Length: 312
Image 1 (cartoon, helix red, strand yellow):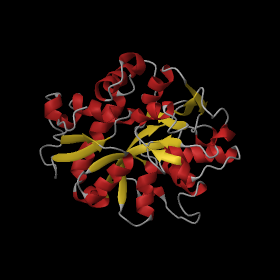
Image 2 (cartoon, one colour):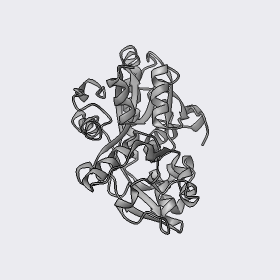
Image 3 (tube, rainbow, N blue to C red):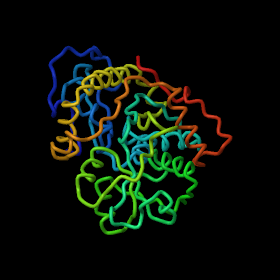
Image 4 (cartoon, rainbow, N blue to C red):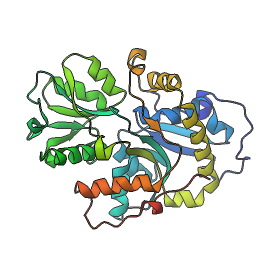
């Protein structure tokens, strides 16, 4: 994937900019992630939706969501994609006033799975006790959902058992027995399951965590307040891209192009729900999960309506 790409570099339509040339900040820095969640923003760039709004997006790919949170707080990017827990934790700890400017993705059945080596030591949920588990980000949404499932099964998993690594590195780590299980997301999940020797153990997002909001686009309150027209242009372009993403073939092509998986993997991957609205009531479920799993103190009083910036 190209490290940085502007709308002009990736092409787009010649539509008249809706922003009317009066955007407070016509060029913004945005960081996505190398996962299926990023398909809409890649479509927004490729199809010229930002350009049509008079907005130039300098798009880079972050290492993980928590890094994007740090970079939004530090000011090196204006908007970043992250799973919700790192952003919520930063707000609760008083590090910064972060706003959710667009929702990204909601889980569907089998979008995330906990996988294990078929010939490994883990055959049941109880076998996970004391074993090493690969996660994309410690304290991230996948880990918290798994903690919830473990509690239901009466299994205690300690923080020391989780090891952060990119999804793409998890299959080799399983094969080497560096880890004994891994929480994986699409499209790397399908690619891994196609390989021999790996099988599903359980779905972290099921039951009470089914249809769960997992990731979104965040910005600092200062950016939101100083650039309302710019933000509205970003939100309109993303809304158009979410509509584009309702077509499976369009998403498959974006994942092949930007994530780098083969077409046969993209054609089999489980599709998420690409969200078109920012619903604070849904995001409150993330706060509840973080309190349930001890990621936030039980007495934490955070109303997610204070973090949401509704589309203009």
